[in-house]
Image 1: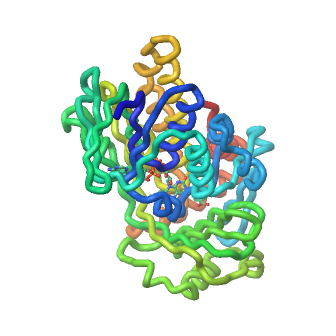
Image 2 (image 1 turned 180 degrees about the vertical axis):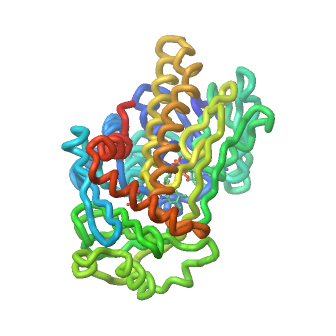
Length: 389
Ligand code: FAD
Ligand code: PHB
């Protein structure tokens, strides 16, 4: 088999890249380890920056998002039992789109099916070869049959645990990492959201977040210990603990109901440098992870894909390697800003196991400054809504 670009992974990065390349006449194959249903069963991000919205539209799969997505012009921050609003629109002129990663993935999968480009689900033992030279190849097994794909380029879009980053010789890559001593327990339910806007909550018992997928579907998160498991959290315990962390008005408005999904995600900051190794490029979670507090994971994946898709299109149209040569530096400049913002939001809002009373007072002073200073609120808003690509 031969293709121009072999893409590893059918998450948002791989599917979006495949679609943008296809629309520019560049042939590509996607190899995904799991089934499509499995990929769609993972409930993840919900907040999409304008840059990512534009890219999804450019990929030709934005129609449902435009119809069903919710535009949010601000967010709420609750601390010391009081809620405050950060007005993104007034401070930056921009807002964000609330639309689930699952729905984006579904729209991209439908677009992929219509494009006629090849996607191999349940591709086992994917391995990457000869990407340091001119003729890279990818091998995989499917239905007991071994296949080799010859290509011009490989795009490693296979997430944090993928094979692409692990295929790079150790002395060619440097990893930067910070692991946080807690996780987020997420619950999805078909209940109306407690508020029109997201609420980020600082509370002595730990962080909480009220988010949503639609006017009828809510997504809530609670900071939890890494020793805990989903089985430790029957729905009643989750709702009880969430209610304790809410302000009085939200406590009264909260509508509870049976969960339709519950999962625990550990929190991590991670960056691998560089993101290019000869003819192999990393994009999305394969190269970097942010804690979800800043809602940046999916948005960073989209910005990587923006840089990489343009670089590849320029290569095939103009025979220029300029964009490919600059890809890693350009993407990393943006990634480190999102890493800083996500780390800062995480440090500001969570309770750390070794936090002292002093640490908590400093967090509260910073939160108070944030909602009273126009400059501080603008800095948060600019980071949250995202810089133009
Ligand atoms: P992924 O979505 O991880 O996709 C990678 C794909 O590659 C997967 O389908 C995987 O099956 C496939 N793959 C892996 N290994 C191989 C292999 N060897 N061969 C072939 N295929 C392979 N971001 C937010 O902004 N907000 C959130 O609330 C949020 N919550 C999250 C919760 C969890 C549990 C996780 C893990 C992430 C969360 N994120 C969140 C981050 C966001 O979901 C990711 O940044 C986004 O999914 C990145 O997309 P991706 O396509 O780069 O990687
Ligand atoms: C979500 O809706 O899943 C979500 C929203 C904002 C975040 C993280 C997750 O910061």
